[in-house]
Image (cartoon, rainbow, N blue to C red; front, side, top):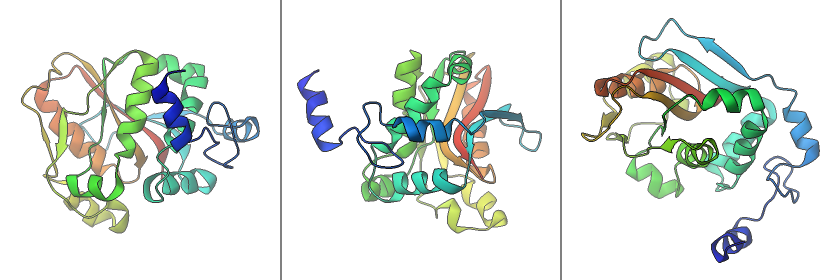
Length: 215
């Protein structure tokens, strides 16, 4: 084990993201079995025209909701390891994700990053891309508006709130590529749709959306 990894283990010990007990792969056996009760799902969406498919792992409720809230708002970035390790242990999902050329995390604003200290979608995207041996590109999209968080708005407000919040890099290099946009939670779909609309400017071959949980 490298010195860097030893230091990371001291700062963020390998504990289960659910029960908090020591777990070599960030998810203890008991909690892994509990999560295996969830069925990996995928559905084609017809409401939005800017992406083809939504792939999600969990419903946004119960222990999953609690984990995600801890991950995003309670300074527990290490929980991403538990999610990633669960995904890669699901052979069917893992193999299906290999078809993409790039994973692009949904960006957060500079202000939000300063407050939180990390982008929760990027941590998952980076680790998952490494396991899949495909590229994680966090520079393609950037957020240019520090708008209100979507979970604090109603359905109509969320649609307006997402418009114009993102822009694409001039050096995006997405033409002809199969792209997977990654976010943590899918609610109304407005954030994902707006990001995919911007990504389409670079002429990718395919854009799908992958999230941990769907509300």
